Length: 623
Image (cartoon, rainbow, N blue to C red):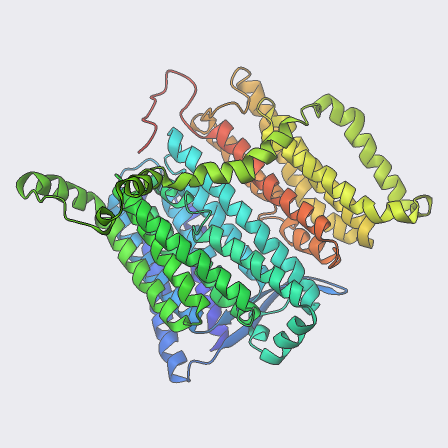
């Protein structure tokens, strides 16, 4: 029975690969591939569930593939199946099947028909990987696939301004949540001295013993998990991204932001419950986040003029209640609530165009006066204040920008002395000096040797922040992200004698993808000398789709997406950071995350959005 879990990964993978090979003009074949992929997976899951329930619904764990192994370190794909997995898999399979049927006709003759089904199947692969994950590494693999699928689906109408802008914004908030996942993985490596599986976390004696000895580490891991869960499930203070994500097609809004992806914060909390369930302060904090989000989202939903935004905030409010149920330990109720909310929001989004048409007619023929509500009993000043705050969505967007992104952008702008010329005159020589002292460590005093890893890692982070704030030269922004990886490798090499084999493994993807990206940028500059900066969206994918695709793949490889060895190399790097080196871990995690945001920003501004040339039709800003 355990080996049968592979089918839930291989079927979506084969369906995705098959869809890539089909021409975009063959709509029927594309839709059939998606239909049969989702249908076979659903049928297989129903059969598997019958046998699993008949066997007494045991928890299943399978160590699938060891991708990398060295002394003291092992990166493996591990799959785990229990009632949480069963609930999420069944809900996901059924909804994906329904969406593929709906989308066959809804997107008929849409220019991005092939791109949509490619992305949906890619999302479904990431969904199953995340749900079946048996350790943090496998979960992060699926988590990354969900993140890039989200960006591609929101930016589906890539010739329009708002979908592209909102796609970058949503991806940025997703990546901020990824800081929590990376730091939780790093701390858990040191807490258990291994890449612990979720099956082992159900060993109460093992978990209790380690958390008793390292209670602060346990609290830190729990808080980082909560940050990642809140960002993924649009809980406060990250709630504003979900309505912005509705710029994509209605089917993708239904499956992604109404039902499945938005509930992954709940999944993360349920999966890691053995870590935080004995920590009362963390449980209270999870419940408080859910309660405050539910109250705020309900108020905002009631004043929205867009039906998609109403549904988005209503879903956020329900997920806040699910957070409270998880904090209270009511796991079964939380799973039932998840499934019910997912089906309801999918239905609401799919019928929303018909409902809007119906209500427009209804308000003329069956007018009903406003009914008395709870707010009407409040003093008018308070009532009007709540109304205005709700209209402004409690300024959540401005709050995130002011607290997170604006300080990082301002710091990056203060580094404007880092130009391409100064990179070669100062940054590269400083890096070569660092390499020299790495091989001649006896020349470095002990007290300086202790702080050099943090300084080198900070240097890499500053490169990324300069790239993030760059508005003129895409080549400079791209080069600085490449240099960040080299500075990180140097920092960790100074820290714990990072083997040359590990350095090559980590930097191999950086060098290949970095070179490919520089080639694309140089080619694009030769074609579009007057439209080659990062000050606006240029939409060059319209005329150079091949360059756009190569650059997207290069960006994914450079940010550590699982298409190169760099993905494993990033995890390998964190295993060489000691448990007391919080600043080194934080600098590295933030550099990885901000580097990914900077790369997607370069891609979006150069290749997406309305085309700059006036002889192309300019669409409306929003769909």
